[in-house]
Image (tube, rainbow, N blue to C red; front, top):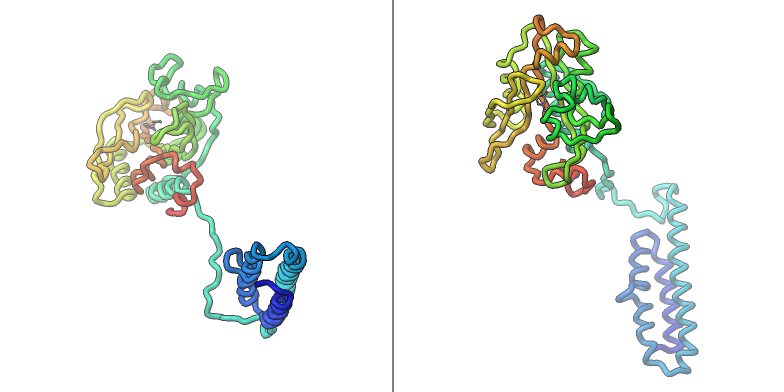
Length: 332
Ligand code: DAH
């Protein structure tokens, strides 16, 4: 029951406790004891108000309110006092130091899984003597399509629905554009990777994104051979997915390679999944870049690092890569 004496006593006992509480932890304990929302002592007093007569309410409620203010303020004061006094000597009586408590672990950032896979792919090919460079995402139609033998009315353009900026300029739909750019400006021998983002007018779903990454590989030399290409890709797949991975190669068609192949990997669910396209560079493409196809041959390949990551880590939905969801990102 609330009486004058009870309130007086309450105030005195709070002050006595307050004097004793000298560490941050003890103060927090005290705060919870007095101000705790459910079981705090102050709350207990408040819960008795309905039992009071109107006269008693008039008398005690203001006292109780000012008690609450006093207690709340005193915690704020004490806390700020403690904060200000942080740099005091270690033996200050305000501190109780336990050197065995583990330190706080800082939150360290890390690379995005797509970039990690790109790095891994670069490292595998670097071992085979490949270098890399990047190029523009806003590209000429001629580099993205025409010089790769995808002329304006070529039916294969249908599969690569394109964001055009105007008749001649577009957002590149494939990193193959970099083959042309690079061969125009460099003499063989060439051994390069071109990682970068490409854009397609795709409906967003679990396996399609309107913007995603590709890595293009390009090798031009006097002795480039289809068997080297196959051997290189086999080596790559085994380094990436493990020595025991089952790989298969089969004929395909790309306008810029002849012959063309696709590479499939046996996934854990027993299905073969396509991971990249490749082939011997078409002599006309070499000619378009002022490289003599009688003297030089080349091969090229293109793959999607997000797809490689999905396969490697068993990720079912490509949209996760762009979700910024820490529960996903922190696993890599
Ligand atoms: N550009 C193809 C694509 O976007 C991938 C590709 C296939 C690249 C064959 C190549 C290649 O260099 O030879 O699907």
